[in-house]
Length: 193
Image 1 (cartoon, rainbow, N blue to C red):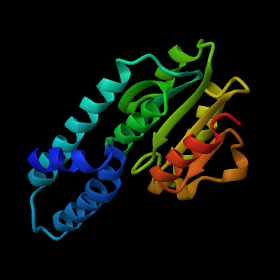
Image 2 (image 1 turned 120 degrees about the horizontal axis):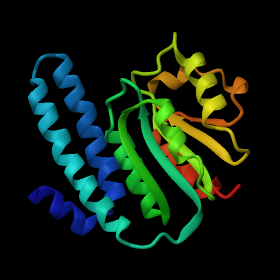
Image 3 (image 1 turned 45 degrees about the horizontal axis):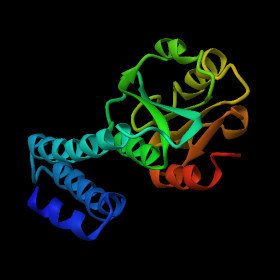
Image 4 (image 1 turned 90 degrees about the horizontal axis):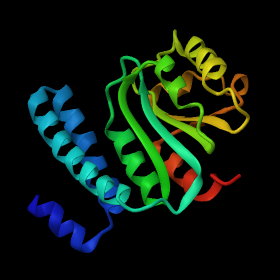
């Protein structure tokens, strides 16, 4: 906490996440895979980072959105639990002045249908780290497109390891980003288009 507070005096949270937290999480992953640390070590650090993101996101959510034409709905598909990147995306979207609805991990597609009566444009945002996988990706996206992306101004934005298995031309309302940082850059430059 002391280190984080010192960093916040010098850097923005975005800079801290990209230059400190992200490399730290990569290093922890390597240490965990080589049995140098236990899962409890990784979970401890991840929980501390999540606390910071939740705190800063809560501060942003207490301010009225400045951009009201688009609502971002952030979720992870069924059986996907890796939410740190999604939490950070939520922070960045809020920081750009948009309204978000953060649903978190392992959300069944059918439960998203309750959100479809919004008057604003909807951007569903997700990270596919484990699920849907190579074998289930086409079925997932077909189902999602037919059931959720039912209006012209609805889109699904995805990043994560499993996106390499998306047939990009087959799903025109699905925007694929290599990393969450590409998603953020698109948000900053092209969301209005």
